[in-house]
Each structure stands twice: as structure tokens, then as C-alpha cells.
Image (cartoon, rainbow, N blue to C red):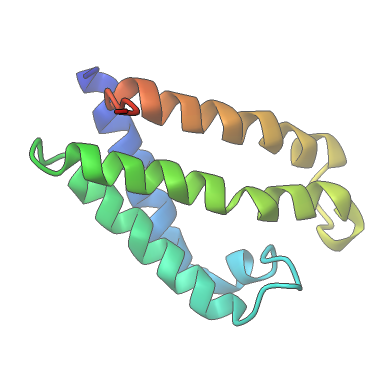
Length: 122
């Protein structure tokens, strides 16, 4: 476990989770149109981020919370792909930034896996 990264991951997801409740419309607009109930998805993912942020701070819950955050980061990847493929729908955000989110999301998944000491057990 890498203590600084654990705290940084907790802070990142706590901030993101809070933002889902403070500005839900900003997140609802990036939910791909083929998914139902964008606001419900925003609130559920925001709650998951907040719970994960708290969970990684508790040693006994860290592994479970880490896997939850990792899976959440993978689950929201289609929204990032949707944004990159439809930049005209996201005025004010440069297309290059939308594409940059894709490898950054993959890096986030790797960082969570590494920092929280997650391992696939067979």
C-alpha cells in the first residue's frame, strides 16, 4: 500500500462524488443517450465514489472499496468514449481534452490497482 496515493485517491473520489450532488446536470449531460435515467446514474455513481473514498481510508475495507472504485472507473469509461466521439455536444471542452480523458481513465484504473495493493487471486 502506498499511503500518499491512498489519501490522494480518497480525496479525488470524495471531491468527484460531492460534485455529482452539487452539479448533477454537468454529469447527466455526459451520460451516453443509450443509458436510461441519467440523473439516477449520476447520483448512484456519486454515492459510490463517496463510499469508495471513505472505504479506502479504512484498512479492513480498503481492498473492497478499491475494487469498487476500480470497477466504477471502468463502468464510466463509456461516458468518456461518448464524449470523445461527440465533441460537438460538449462545447467549451477542446476535443483534444476529451480524447486525453481516455488514456487518463486507463491510468486511473492502474493507479487504483497499484496504490491500493489490489491483486487478482486465482
